[in-house]
Image (cartoon, rainbow, N blue to C red; front, side, top):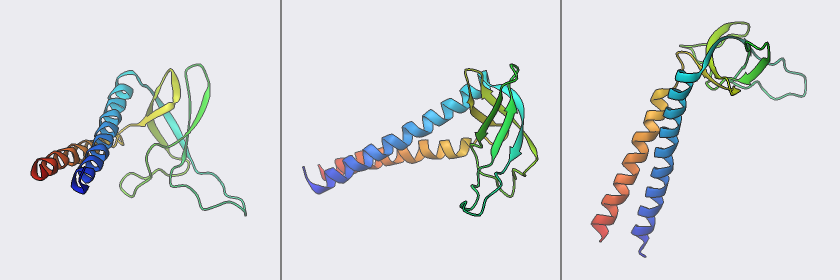
Length: 136
């Protein structure tokens, strides 16, 4: 096996992993949009002590289920200038009733990131196929 075939194999495997990660992410978004239960969550940033590290960019989201179970999860997305997650603010989310720790923030689904993984993965696999065809 020549060095170019090894590069092609590495490129194909990496592309396949990226493609599958993107497809899995898109499927999870669709699933939570379909079966997720809407809830209003409180945005909370943890108060730091003197020995703590700088705060995470992902705040805690606190919400209650209809069974009055209080759930705290880290936000699946970062706060941004366009869509800030302000301490004490509220955001709508959808959670999986079977596992309330699985959440999706309304309007912040990150579909574009998942689609980018799908496209990059497909392009990497295609590049690997072309590389093998050129070398062979």
